[in-house]
Image 1: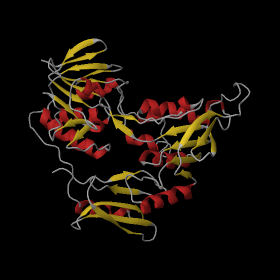
Image 2: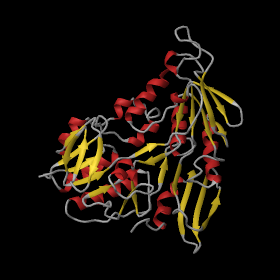
Image 3: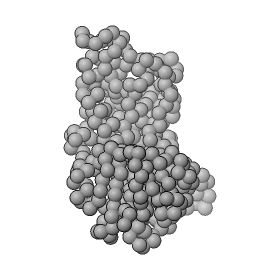
Image 4: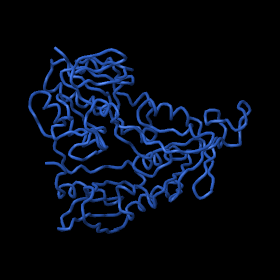
Length: 399
């Protein structure tokens, strides 16, 4: 009997496996992952310093423990290079493996901006626990960190690093933080909260060059220091307005893009993500996708709640109870304790307007469509307590 195979051991893959095992204890299950298979809560990466967690403390179980918990075979450090949907096979580390049903939980890749300079390759991005472990090693002696990007992850890391006592500079082309999620008034409120914490902003600018700085310690060649050696100002950033900024480390947080190359090479329909229907079925028989790599009814939602809803629905489908995924209103909580934010963005392309109030200590922004129906909201600071009541007023994204 061929197994159900899940490619990916991130939050999507492991959540699906857990939900499936609640319904089916015995069907053969195999998980194939390119990393070491540790289970960990990815959202905690951006506030681990504040919570006092070392990277190794974020892992809740290793691959052996997960294999026992899930009654599953887990292949770690394994690369899937091809999918043959007609033959129901995968090529894994050069060998073909048969599947009964296949689930793609491939996640997303960080977007990398083109930059010039002799230290452009020193710019870090964080997309998993291994990335985060390297980041923590590099900043262990750092006093200054520059963050490229003022979106959700950039703002969360800015708050976390500042809580750890580091000088933080945020560079972004936007007029205000979280430009794609929040009306400008709400973004400005978040900016002020982080400014009060000590974060420095360089908005409406981009980074054009990243070069090694001119200062060095006794053991490094001139201009080659990193924060690991304890020297200050390891890098010099040149911004689009010609100004420069010196820092010990550079972290890029400019967004994610669904991983679709493997699916596309297999002939599956791909758009912004791997195209799936409400049953999370892709365009070939017995192939499914969920999480950051999936596009469900035109929606690619790179957040935890859509993923969890999808995992529960797909688990039922795989267990013999075909269940369309439902997306209720799913507010996103931004982990910026300096100025908390909760947002439920209106559907893309919908006509309407933001109506904004600024009571003491926060912002209440409500998005109404052309029929004056509430379709989204953003609450910040003192107003975040209204999130649950507002969420009940918003129609489901997918019913």
